[in-house]
Image (cartoon, rainbow, N blue to C red; front, side, top):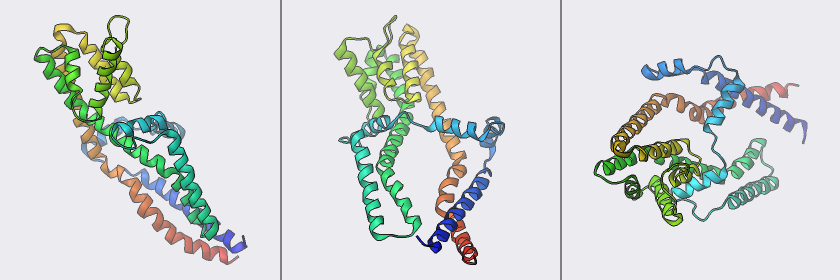
Length: 287
C-alpha cells in the first residue's frame, strides 16, 4: 500500500467522522407538535449522561437472543426450516464470499464495508420478520381481549373462551392454541390455581415479549375473578384498545424523528462525504 492509498483511506475516515458528528448535531433537533412535544418534555433525558441514554435505549430495544428472533419469525410463518446454526452458517458463507471477491478484485477501501453487511444480512432478515410478528401480536391483543370478553359475557368459562380465542387467525392465536394444547396434553390448569402456575403464563413467557406476558398476567387474574370475570375482562379489553390507539398516535407524532435516521444515512451522510472527500484529498495531496 503506497502513500497515495494511505492518504485516501485517511481522507475517507475523516470525511465519515465529519458526517457522523454532523448527524449527531442534526439529531438533537426535534420536530414535534402538540401532545408529542409535551410527552417529550416530560420524558426529557437531558440530565442523563450519554452512556445512560444510549444504554437505556439499547436495553429497551434489544431482544432476548437470536433464538427469540427465529422463534418469532417462524411464528409469523417465515423461515420455518431455519435454525440458529443455519443463520450463523449463512452469515459466514455470505461474508466469506464477499471477502474472497474483494481480495481478488482489490477495489477501493469503502467497498470493504460490504463484508460485515453481507455477514449481517441473514440475521437482519430474521430480525425484520420477528419484529413484524411482534407488531402483529400487539395489534391483535385488543381484538383477542374483546373476543374473550364477549365469550365470557355470553356465559363461557375462561377456559372455553380461551379455546375459542385460539381460533383467531394470526400469531397470537397460534400462541394461545399452543397453551390450550399443552394444558390438554399435560392435564395442568390453563390458569393459575392456588400455588400451581397456569400453562398460559408459562407458554406466553417463552416468547420473551413483555407486552405478551402482561397480556397473560391480566388474563390469568381475570380467570380468578369468578362472576366478576366478564366485567373485568371487558375493562381489560378497553384498556388494551386505548393503549394501542395511543401507541399509533405517538408513532404518527414521532414520524419525523423516525425518518431522520434513513434520511441521514441515505442522503445527508453521502452528501457530506461527497463534499468533504475531494477537499480532504486535495489537502493531503499538497503534502
